[in-house]
Each structure stands twice: as structure tokens, then as C-alpha cells.
Image (cartoon, rainbow, N blue to C red; front, side, top):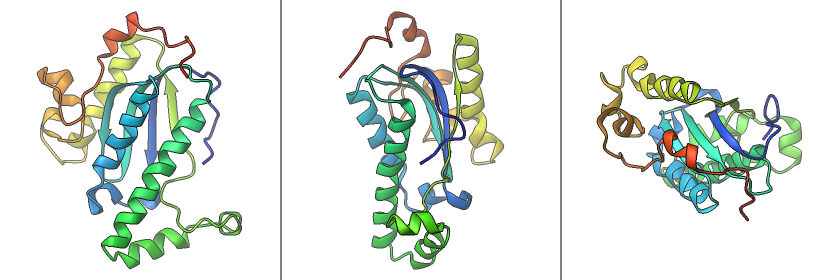
Length: 194
């Protein structure tokens, strides 16, 4: 899954966004928010840190601190998207969502079809921004936490269930526990974790 521009580093804090194909609300349709949480669990097992997130019906925003595991961050994110995509397709099949599955198949290009790909679940690229300062991390967290408010899903950020806003605005961990970005000061992300 290509990215517009490859992330040159193997560690660091990054603001990441990936979107369902055609902005379809697949996480809502499949009630598959837990698929992202499962990916977060995998990341934590590999010594990465989830700093903040929001899982919208059609896309994911996250601030993730990646430890150096020897793998490129692009590969880590691409593998995560693939892992989540398989889960979404399985759920759509169980729901007999033939129209959506057909739409996801019709978005494939000739190369993807030749490679045996059956569905295009996510946009092929993802967006990223390196978070070099605590101020920038805070800006990105505010942006993602207010996303559900802008979409008129809730009035206050901490009311949205699939977000870390509850932690940052009310002091209570939500569905998925996150690591405060302030704790990154004491974490050496550059040390190799295998």
C-alpha cells in the first residue's frame, strides 16, 4: 500500500491518517472499531506507543510513537491496514453485504487484479506528519479529538466513544488506553526493539 511520500525514519512520533475507499463508513457498517484496537494491541506488543486516536466511521487518525524495530514505519502501517482490511472483508461477508463487497471489488486497478487482490478496502496511500514538538503533538491531538464534533457525531470530544479525548480532556482512559505524550520525554524510541 503506497504512501504519497515514504517516512524516512524508523522511529519517532507521527500523526497518521488512513481512509476507507470512497470514504465508505466501513468501521460503522461492520461495527469494526475493535479491528483498529487489535492493531493497536499488536503495535504495543512491538514496543510502539499509542498517544492518541479517533476512529471515525470512514477513517482513522492516530498519533503513534514508533520505536525502532528495524522495520520501516511505512511497512508497519501498511501491514496494519492489511490486517484491518481482512477483518473488515470477513465481517462484510458474514453480514452478506454483497453490494459493498462489489463496490470494493470494482475499485481495483488492473495491476491489483493481476496480483490477485479481491477488494480495495482503504485508499492506497496514507497521510502522515512527523511530530517533533510537544506543541505539535497537542495540535494534532486537538484536531483528531474534535473530528467527531465537526462531523456532528457528538457535542463534546470526550463524548465520542472511539477516541482518546476522554483521557486528554476528562482524565479517564476510554475504551483503549493510551500513553500520554508527556511520557515520551522518558522513552528512547531510537533503541532497537526486536
